[in-house]
Image (cartoon, rainbow, N blue to C red; front, top):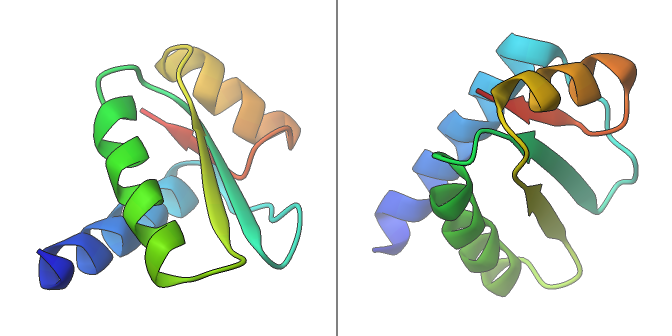
Length: 82
């Protein structure tokens, strides 16, 4: 499972960077907002990442793809899920 989770999280993060540009709010956190179909998967990966990397976290919120892209474009979140 561990060999699957980390590469998948990296792909998810890279996808978000490609879609929206990465704007980090702090050195220890990343925020994602957007697609509710991706949200459960992203939450699972974020939870696992937090267990493997104490002191770092990934915050995941739904709201829809359009909201995610708009939030990323305006700098409210780091990654807009779509």
